[in-house]
Image (tube, rainbow, N blue to C red; front, side):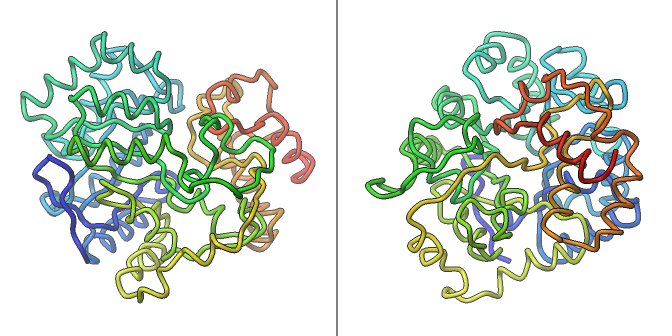
Length: 383
């Protein structure tokens, strides 16, 4: 395993890290297997934005006796209410769920306290001019968190936070599809149905390139989410490039951006940890992503869910990300249809329960037409 400095924090992180969002549906035994596979492979950083109580307890139990081997990113503003994840800027709720995080992770400190999911300048203003940033700074002063982070998908908002001087670590979505979008495309347009031509483009969206350079200049370390685009870039049937990248190519792409310290790979099974760790044994030729991009003159950015759960909470109690994941798996034959159908049937609420209220679409950072997809899933699964 190779290790990198995490900006100005004084921490050194493994270049491959662990994203834990997919562990929410797994048993304590599987969570332990995944976390231990990561630790045994040299991974020393994980991100856990999830507010669901049991997964926090499961990860905490998996780290028991090995806490000092893992740097933890925990999120300020990720809460659990009425059985669902929510994002909140209410100070009391943020305090309650940071206390819950510490208790369930069986620790008295969080290495990187992430201010959760800040994608607009208005939201950043609320954080900087309200109690949330004051709370984060106080936690850092008290040693409850060692560094202040922020998660974002928007380069303009993220850059302003970087240049404000209070940010230590940025959790940002990095992959070729996101980086090569034209400058005038904002986050809500990432997966809006459209096709554009790459001819004449200089490469990376200048706003995103400016963000990476700003992070490097200000000593803000980047940890990466959405490296695989929720698996979309690994699947030629779903990839906007109409061809698949390899995991090594996508990891190398992210690691080649300025200021990037660690690529956090979402793993649901220990075998997926093994696949991510295999990057360390790949050759330069196997990591080379240039050929995959060079032959692609244009690609379609048809709207696609990346299963991030930021559309929650759903008034009907639908686990939108799980429905979309299973629907995509069914239509791309990613697994036996009987298995996918069984997993769908086991969900507490189904696509047919959708109220078409639209609140999920308002929250979605990727402009996904959730209502339309719920209708399509209802037709595909029969309920």
